[in-house]
Structures are given as C-alpha cells and as structure tokens.
Amino acid sequence: MTGDTDIAPAVKTTKKLFPHSQILFIFPAFRKNKSLLKLCPHSFAINSQQYAKHQFPNPYTLKNGKIIHKPDSW
Image (spheres, rainbow, N blue to C red):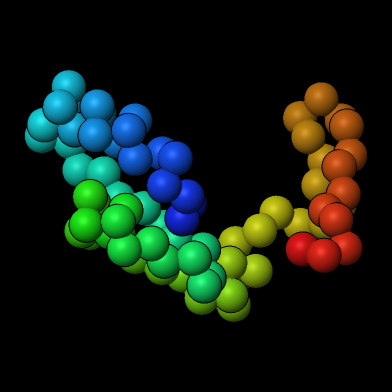
C-alpha cells in the first residue's frame, strides 16, 4: 500500500524480470497517484473508513509478548 513514486523503479524492474506477474497498488485514502496507476492499471484506492477498519487493534501484542501502541493521530 503506497502512493509514493519512489517505488516505481523497483516495480519496473520486477515487471521486466517477471513479465507474467500482476502487480498493483492499493492507494491510501487521498493518495491516488496517476503515474503509479499508469504503471499498474489494476491498482485501486481505499477510503478512510476501509483504512481504519483494517488496522491492527490498539494496543497490539506481538508474538514475543511485546506490546506496541499506535500513535494518537492514527
């Protein structure tokens, strides 16, 4: 999931090395990117409600028992 174009060179290389692979981006809410969409036309955006729905619970306990908390701004 990204809307950042710095990933484009890696995607171009992957498409050359694995031409039969399908690559797509899931754009975060309000981050759809036209150049990435052109590179991977099956990409799509999710809205802010979907984004919130698929976040880990807060707090989240890792397998090793460590507890992590999301920032309040999330």
